[in-house]
Image (cartoon, rainbow, N blue to C red; front, side, top):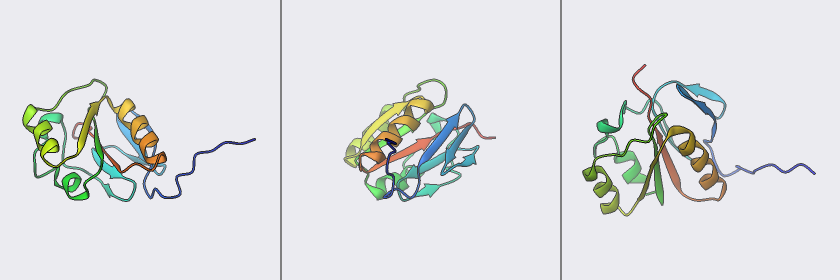
Length: 125
């Protein structure tokens, strides 16, 4: 018996990743992206975690996901406390993790039908 995940409700899925590329619906993106099941912002104007601010996070805040996942590259880098506080003010959970974990977690959450967004950060290429 074949068992496959059904992503029928998701318009955008992360289908692969490596250190300098994320695949969304099998198309490569070599720059930072912001993705949810129905939204893709590519490129996302964030090149490092310290670039995060209310302006470039506005799309997340407008969509009001249950959880936002920020992939910070090979290593986990936490955002400044004021950024964490912004997510709290908007009632959105925030998880920061390395990019590979962020991509896998996004896929699991979307497959479960959860309202999640992922911001995958790559240095300016």
